[in-house]
Length: 298
Image (cartoon, rainbow, N blue to C red):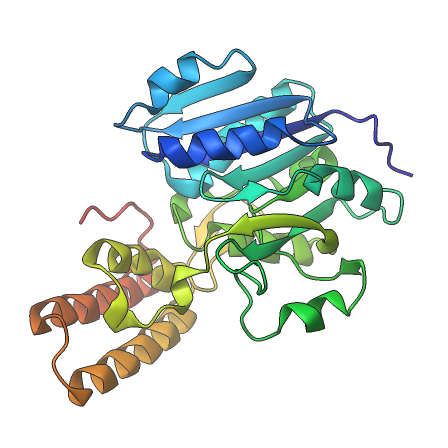
């Protein structure tokens, strides 16, 4: 049986969102079962994040170039394990836990031996719907019980060090939007069953992947390059990242059809941006077929 006395280290990845980071850290400090340490990974912030972190004596901070969500989480988990963590509680700066979230996860340790326990991630605006899984209502999800075989990775995600040592760290090469789902699939492939603890609550903005393409800003759509390119990606036993051209192509075609339909319905915010969005989708699918791993600038 897992013991609640085990050492838990919270890991937060941030970039240029000091106001969100400070709120997230405050929420960690207010936990009824506080983490034993807090690690913040600053992915090359250009705002006042570094100055703020320097004034937080209870926060262990890492500063590195922008290595995306995958690289940020990998660095944070490594530091947590070096600090003697038995469990790593990971999140990004735009999410934050309910005051009793970690206590709820610790309570669930008495009910299961699974090394992946996840808080229930709710839309921070309404708090009455799931943030990432729109196909099911909150009531339907909670009705499945206290421990549900599902997880929203890297959002209030509590991982035992044995799991990390078994399957490794997140794939930095995926950068963002896909690194977490690849890790989820990797865990399943290793026979690990991630479970969501429905009475442990975590809040996060609604998934932007569900927003219609024509409503996305140019900056947001740039991130969809990774959503398409990384679809179905996997990490082999040798640690090499392998992209999935077929799944990336399927996702790109789906997005292009939606975009074409919206363009035919009437004037959008600009055909130039629509053409650029279409080109980004095509480039992402092409990169997946060529297994081109790298960070896209612009």
